[in-house]
Length: 334
Image 1 (cartoon, rainbow, N blue to C red):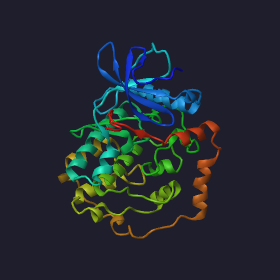
Image 2: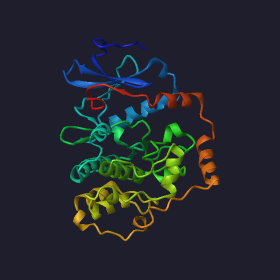
Image 3: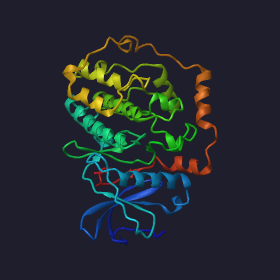
Image 4: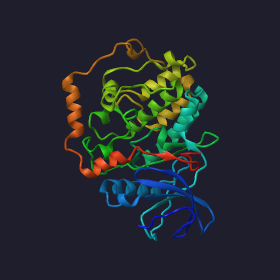
């Protein structure tokens, strides 16, 4: 692999500016010399090319990105004639939803609903095309000046019919502990309803400034999700209507069979809140009762996560993944 710097040319792309860097790859703004249009170019670090876990994730993200074509999904450009491993994506003016939440903390209900609707429409599209994101979170949603969104990072997404990946393979199946669904915590594959659960968590966070389940470590967070009920959103933010609170609870049902069946249903309730019936939920009464997990249950989930023991490649992947440094442009740093 050739190390690239600002001003270099990679095939028919000119490298213009570093946008983001992680332990695995760098993202540059560039220009396609054939069209004159700006693009985002993701280039793996040389040492990562031989990592099978990273390569699998990179290839999955590329294949899914070229397959999908929706205004709410980051488009990946298909091009077989490349001199080295890299990915070219459409250039998007904007920033991460996480950056907006870091600045604003709590969003007005109307704005939170608009953003959630944009995500729900994008999810409806990818789900109908057999793709489950599996790592939906504010870090993987870009937002422009008009609150239009784009889903990014399909590195651990799943295609319908793909082989099942177990909970033990954390690097390949699990999203961020704050946003993964109860069925994923229990080691199940998860489906489109798992993405809807994550979207419910994000809506809760946009409206209250905090995620519904918390703890000092990932296992504590996941057990809190299985055993306890979150603080009702209206207790944190009285501006939330009872109907909007009910929508959140429907998205956060522990049993996926009780959750929204699809993103279209979720979006419909958000768009017709005056027709949402408010249930007399036990969660509204017993949320102060905090249950501690039995040690046997804790050990059970720890065992699920650690057996089989991750390979050195997977451990290296974990060490590398979180270290993102965002610079200006391409949304993740503007």
